[in-house]
Amino acid sequence: MEARVNKADWVEEALGLLAEFGVDGVKVEPLARRLSVTKGGFYWHFKDRPELLVEMLETWRSGRIGAIRRHARDAGKSPQERIEGLVRLYIENVNPKGVAIELAIRDWARRDEQAAEAVADVDATRLELVAALFRELGLEAEAAQARAFLMYSFLFGQVLVILRSGEDDRRRLVGDCVRTLLA
Amino acid sequence: MEARVNKADWVEEALGLLAEFGVDGVKVEPLARRLSVTKGGFYWHFKDRPELLVEMLETWRSGRIGAIRRHARDAGKSPQERIEGLVRLYIENVNPKGVAIELAIRDWARRDEQAAEAVADVDATRLELVAALFRELGLEAEAAQARAFLMYSFLFGQVLVILRSGEDDRRRLVGDCVRTLLA
DNA sequence: GTCTTGGTATACGGTAGCGTATGGTGCCCG
DNA sequence: CGGGCACCATACGCTACCGTATACCAAGAC
Image (cartoon, rainbow over all chains, first blue to last red; front, side, top):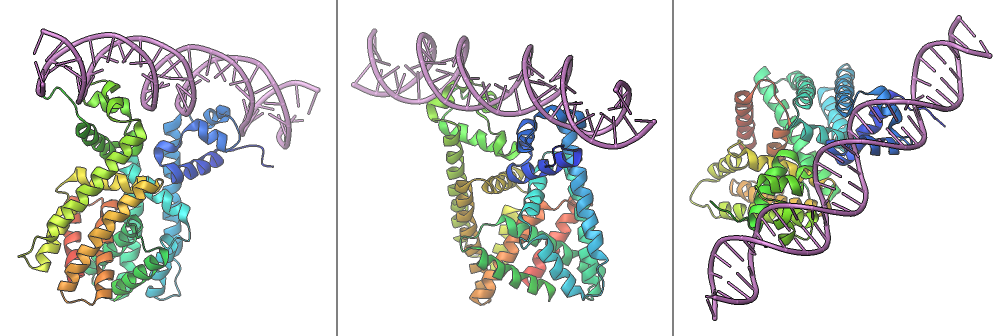
């Protein structure tokens, strides 16, 4: 039943809109319609649309960084396994909505300083984690940093390229690439 | 002086808007304002806004594919040099507007089938070119394809990650990565 | 039982953009 | 020199969205 809609619900649904239509698609009236309410309540929680946007960014940033920190403590597995876990976690579309949000936010970041800062923040965290794993694998600090950058960039870039040959082909290619990056 | 604005001018300026604000930013009235005319002439050249959008896509697609074909005929240099030329050409921001257009179109492609098709088209062409260069370098067909995918994806992904350490650092990292990819 | 907290509905005025209509205007061509 | 072609200005009606105002309501706290 869930009659009432709270602040978190607004943000959550707004992220859904973001994933589907990009920043410019998160508009308050459509958002309210999605939640089957009118925008009456929106302006109770948020001063205006920009305030919702920063809230979304904060939610995303802390969510992503939290996820990374949780993953980092995931000891007991080999570095390879943990890297492969990351690959699965962020890319191999277990979670298409999450990927869509990432891409939408990165696009947004090209025009918005605050979005860019959030992205820089999570990138720094993730890159450091991946670099640490490469160091565990025996690489020198510099080399590990470069390798982490290469791997991380590849994983993102890969979702931007459109293969006509289909998803199976992509999975195969990504697999091959990850393997060579771990060599 | 250039008083009159022709179809190509509209498309050109529309691509500028696309680069700056994304697809949703290409709106006909603002576009006309940029060209210092009213939208009167717009609807003489184009039936409606969607028609402009497909025109932009076509222009971009044929432009990119043409550029690739031109580059492919650029013999006389070693494969390494030609690959490094590509890196410079498409990525190392010689041409920030071109990169912005690419990204905006790829974002657009997530929601629009026609944009996706254009992107798939240029990706196929570029991937094949890069794969050919890796074959020249002595890799087997399969390996060359995978390496091309890795390199191409990396170059795109790299522009999505935001480094706080600045552009010099990025250039250094990208250089290192490209070198390991050519090894 | 009434008060407060956390919402929701409705209605309004304003702006931006879309697409249409219609009537210019400068320039080239015959 | 008179079309007509290529383009521009103006004005209109329509819709979508923003933000504000204001009144309402339901549930728990006292």
